[in-house]
Length: 368
Image (cartoon, rainbow, N blue to C red; front, side):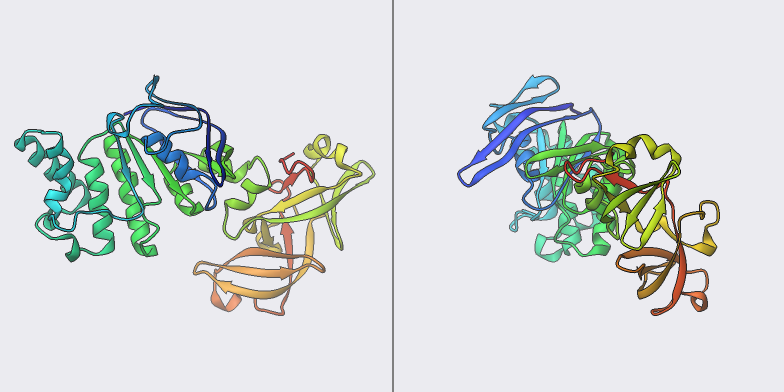
């Protein structure tokens, strides 16, 4: 296991700066996820930790030791890439054993490690097969096994399941979680998939344009995003964000969006007061817009009539696109009985859960 510290990392390429003043601490035994859109610098950070790329500025520390200028082979780090990178002329057993043989480990220890790893990943029956005989998911499992068999201090995963279909991705996510629970090794996992990040990470570091936007536990990022970018990145359907004015009537504050007027909770008064003249960005998630007959506690001032535009069945619930005048939203409707499902063109009464909505500064884009 290993504790990782990145201090003020900067990486400049000829085409521009990929990573800017990036700092991160990963605790011993933690599964940390680097998430963000393509091109935000996630893989560059991973390669810097692995020793495959040198930072332009900053320090990399593993267990308190400065390894910034240390070669990759001396860092005791295992990396799993997007492509499987298996040796086609070697059977699965030899692919798993190759790194141990290069380290001149005793044959008995190599056999024990390979068998132990194969059992953990459920690939024992594949040990005598060639890579060409394996499916995509089986190949990726072998690639993961090749990293595990070494028992390194640190595992680095660079979007390892992006080439697999969704069913296999779900299965392999489970395998990674299971490996982490079993080995308790430190893992840094890179992905652009918000679902994967939420499912896997003890903590998530969200990146944008080479910088760290927010570092938090998955539900912390989801419920308390630091800014508009974080709010929009996590959640499906994505959070609806709208420019909104602030009204004050008889000491009570309201959000105003064209024909839509919603009462704000009294505990938001101090946050809202400075924005009475400038307005805010209003954010609401689909699960916080509900049919009126499902929700009765907070209706006063926040019950709205809406027309249904499109209904997207999702099994136990539907994503319902609605119009409230000049504003459109997506809400989640529970499928209690298909006969009771809302239909396009139908008029419905909805309720906004104002204790769950988020407000952002329109200039800084930071959460209030």
